[in-house]
Amino acid sequence: MTETIPTIAIMHGDQTGEELLLESLRVLDPSVIRQPLNFAHFDLGLENRRRTNNQIVHDAANATLKTGLALKAATITPETAGDVGSPNAILRTAMNSQVILRIGRRIPNIRPIGGVHAPIAIVRMAVDDAYGAKEWREMTETGDEIAYRTSRISRSISRAVSEFTFQYAKKTGARVFGGPKFTVSATYEGMFKKELDAAARRHPEVRYQPLLIDATFALLLQTNGESLVIPALNRDGDLLSDFVLQLYGSIAGSESLVLGFDENTSEVKTVMAEAPHGTAPALQGKNIANPMAMILAGAALLGYIDTPEARQASRAIYESVFETIHEGKKTPDLGGQMSSIEFTDEVIRRVVSKLEVWSALG
Image (cartoon, rainbow, N blue to C red; front, top):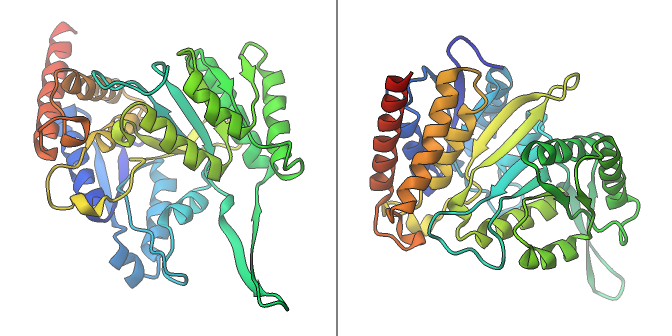
């Protein structure tokens, strides 16, 4: 998946999405992390997507299929029908992505809601379901208007999400918790449930507590602090991940990974790392948006580069981000007074220091 010098496809975005991407790239500078990197830049800002009729999105996806690595800024999805639509949907389909992984975790000195304190991972379908579904409206003879939607999920994606869920739970010592609303949708959502049950049989050592999606939401506020992995349909996972991240204090507290797998080995083939939040236009140009999630996205991406330098850099960034917050150095959304740039400067200072010390220790 990596080259002699790994290449990361950099997908530029809109508003604060672009501003925070630039902060993340400051941290990923090879002079900071001691890992040589090449960057291939693609402008996925709304105007360029319109100008190229989304060709730039396909170019970025093709580059990621070659390099295996991408870092994406938040982008605007226009609300008008017939416009360029969501670049995320195009990217995930074009890159043959199957899983979106988002992990809610404690943010130092930030009080979580309810009993949560151990990590909660959301393993979400990356494609299909309500996203990209065919939609239309029809008028009835009585003058009422009816809206329809035809969505789909596939056996292959259901199986990939289920298998990854149990593998990740085994790796992290977590319990698989939740699932789809299979009692109401026995054919559609029931297919996903059957694949989850099959994965449970393949991994009997993993604790498995299947629940309907509504019960999953409710019981998350009564957890005993145990690490959980929650498998979800695309739409359910979108809702769940925002909810779970906010339980820990901020949607900017974690990275988001879009994963594609090798069909023969089930190993990760492509990784697109991004922040789970949007473009926050109200914060644009104010230098106060929290760069934490985008910085962690870069750190996560380094974890998929098979060199000692990349692995050390990944750990150093994670530790530096959380140590900075632990010492009360935070952006305003977390109750602090640091600017976006000042927060990044502090993370960079700590990363450089850690890598220097670790190098001296051999």
